[in-house]
Structure formats: C-alpha cells, structure tokens
Length: 266
Image 1: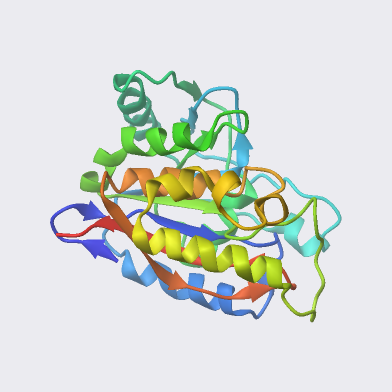
Image 2 (image 1 turned 90 degrees about the vertical axis):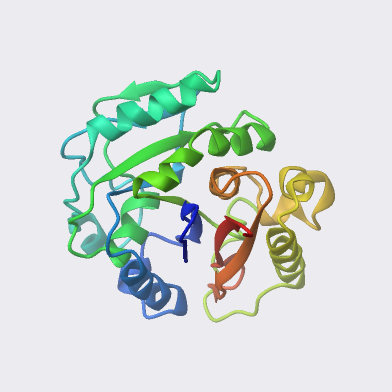
C-alpha cells in the first residue's frame, strides 16, 4: 500500500456510522488490520467529511480533544476517547504547502478530532501513538477544487505522512436511512460500480463530474461532504494516479463502505 519511490500512497476509507468501533462488520475488521501496513509513519493527515469550513483549514493542536459530534447513539460511544497527539509544526507546514499553490488556508488552534477522524483511526492505530492533524473540506466548492487541494499537499507523501480521506463511498443519508438487515438497493450498487470503475481508471473527469456523469448521484450523495475527501486523497497521489480497491462491503443496506488507495504507476 506504500509506493517505494513516490512515498506513501494516499487512501480513502468509508467510516460508516459512529457505532463502527462497536460492531462486528467487515469494514471494522478491515480497518483493524489496515494499520499494520503503516508501522513507520511520522503522522496522519485526515481529511474528514465532518469538518467543513469556508476555506481550507488545518488544526494545529498539541492534544486534540475527541469530538463526539453525533446524536442519539449508545452512551458507550460518548465515553470513548482517542488520546492521539497532534503536530502543530506539521500543521503549519501543511498550511504553507497549500498557500504556496495560491490557495488560502487558515490554522485553527482549538479544533479537535471529529468522528470522521477518530472512529477509523482508533481502529487502525489503537495505541494512539501516531500524531494526527486534520484538513477541512468546503461544501460550497466544486469537486475540482478539492482535487487541486489534494495536489497542493502531495509532497507530504514523501515526508512520512499518511494522507487519509475519510467519508463514504455511498452515503445516502438525507435520501435513505439505515435499514439493518435489508438488501442493498440497485441504485446504490449502480453508483458503487461506477465509482469503482472511475477510481480504477484514475479518470479525473469522471470523478470530478460525478454529479453529471454518475448514475443516481443525488441518491448516493445527497450532500457532497462524504465524497470530497475521496477527491483530496486522489489529488494527493499526483497527476496520472490510479486507484485500487483495498476493501469493499456494505452496511445497513445502502451505506457503501469501500476503501481505495491511490498512486501513480511506475
């Protein structure tokens, strides 16, 4: 999962529901095994679906708090803490990389880790011994701008930083809810198949124009938040990158839990 010549391959993971750490499902098992592939990394940069700001923003916090940004879930979840450290120096470096490409970037000295970050990362790195910083998305910007944001941070791959986009391959909340034990709908499968093909091809046009070119985008992603982290991770792999599927499963009917890694073919 890590390219020898081009640094660490950025990845995209689907984090599903906040209850993921509590559930015995394939996506949880996958994430628990994924961290073993990254034993010598300096830090993790997470682009989460659950932090949206007006312009790109990074958090520069020594000890980021665990943010329980969800409602109506089991009390056990609200007791969970993920005490990973931050890395203010790396955060400032990240902001400089983004600004050097002509993109405005803010630094937030208070923001902790939302569940789009700590839920998958506590499964991947349960010892909480790897520093984590976050980079926000912008729901009002078009997909191509998120691809550009990823390309602005591509040098981090060669600095021992694992870039993780955390969202959802198919995330229909706002169109369809959870239906535990239910069958996956055909429209969700159609979008998921389309997305897999576009990722494998590394087709920039398809991936950034998903709202016009994908089947059922208004169902699969009623809101852009869980799709944009994929584009940042794709962009961070560099021009000409292609993806590969590193996990595929479904949860609660129509939540697509696929994960991808991205790199340029040698």
